[in-house]
Amino acid sequence: MPELPEVETITRVIEPQIRKLQINHISVYRPEIIAHPGAEDFCRRLTGQIFDHMERRGKYLIIALKSGDRIILHLRMTGRLLITPADCPIEKHTHLVIRMSNDRELHFCDTRRFGRFWLLASGETDTYSGIEKLGIEPLSANLSAEHLYNQLGKRKKSIKECLMDQSVIAGIGNIYSDEILFTSKIYPACPACSLTWEEWSRLAEVIPQCLSFFIRKNAITPEEYFQTNGQEYRNTPFLQVYGHENEPCPFCKTPLRRIVIGGRSSTFCPCCQKSTIIA
Image (tube, rainbow, N blue to C red; front, side, top):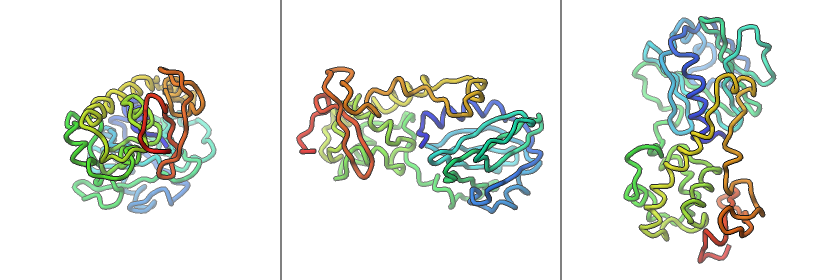
């Protein structure tokens, strides 16, 4: 699933290409991807509207329209957005096509069909998408050791699971929780309530640093993005632990280990991330 750095990359690539353009026509090939208000109303209400800007909230994309209406999109596991020429062949698993006033198209592709769109009218309360339940943005200046402790300091769940709780911190998933905990030298399975103040302070410092680093490494031009069908992300060579089970730790050379926490895999260094818990 795309996490915050990937969704931020998509926003930065797509937003300049749709800004101020009018929606001339919409084709929905899989009506179930329109979660609200329904595919027919979605197309009718959007046709003729003008894109204003696009932004990210956690793992969600928000496309604001000149009217004040807004489209909310969650890519889920395999969703992708592409800007293509109007005469570009529609690839397999394309479920929505928006024809724009510059004769280019915005395509939504999704192999597993879990991605969802919501269209909210100007001033309409969002009781549909779940975006209103999101916690703090991890790049916010308000993310502090005190905030993390107040939200998580009494929880018995693992710190790995807590970091992925979208109602506490928006946008962190399996990949970057591993990277954050490795950099913070915190064992992923330790209960959040067992962390010291020093560890909360390290987390508050590392979370925005780590995510900002991968956003920078993900940087890609619109041309490169199009050529790779929106699947080219450049974080992989820079991941220190995620996906590197049994490889040497980048710092101490101890083989990295993989464990399962809350049904999700977690890779860590047993030396740099020491634990008093028997894993």
